[in-house]
Image 1 (spheres, helix red, strand yellow):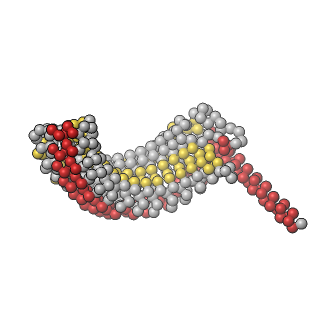
Image 2 (spheres, rainbow, N blue to C red):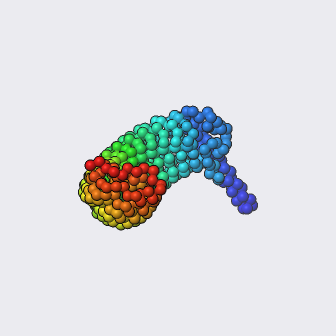
Image 3 (cartoon, rainbow, N blue to C red):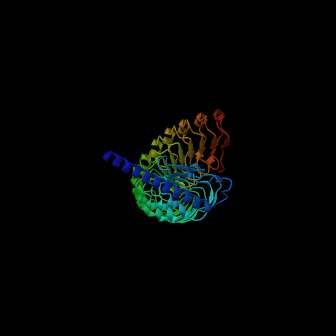
Length: 389
């Protein structure tokens, strides 16, 4: 008798669970249809969004057990319209990918109700308004990509409260204000993309607290002040792009402690000499110091950068001769030294750079003939050798 009762009880529990699962799945289907209503231009791409089996609809991925919607991928479908607040009803969503559409309007506050979400990609749309503070409720969020929209306002400092955030890409918007210092205390952040906004203020000394960060890009903003002296502590950086801001002062000596593959400082107002220690940055593939107010000679130790493919130093106030040691940069493809105050002759050692595609030495005060062995640079597409005094 007891066995029969237990079996009946188990069957009842199973039936209730099935009803709950069915109810939740039906709710998700209804929420998806509400989401569809806010889109335009969906006739050809979401034609199958009808009927009861929402797990078979285009771009919808469901959990195999609960049949709740786990992922929504509608990227690159030329969708127009807005993101419906109904998206917040999809409680089991782990991933939302709506990139590369024509969506407008604001990011709904209800996005913060998608409590399970790990990836949110709304990039390459025409979304406007602020980044909603409700995003900071998404404690499982690992990837937040909102680049290439029309978002305005400040970067919410509460994003620092996301304990699992590894990728934060807000590039190419109209965000303003300062970079929140609390962002730099996120222990797991690996990628910070803020280029092409209207951000102001200084580079915080705290920027090197991000011990796991490998990508730091604030290109094309309105940042001022100097590179902090703590820059040498950013030992995890692989890409550091500070270009096209309003940064001043000298390039700090301890920048040479970095092991970055890309160092881009162009288009600022840096003054003083090029630190010789840069010649010890063996991982450098791209070094761009162009269009600043740097002065003094080109350090001959730069010839040690045998893995560097692109060396841009044009548009400064560099003086002295071209170091023949630059001929040791065996993987160099682009060498741009134009628009400086260099003197002397073109060193024949540059003829050893057989992988060179582009050599620009114009608008200096160079003299003498072009070395014959430059013809060894068989891949050279562009040669602008001589200078106007």
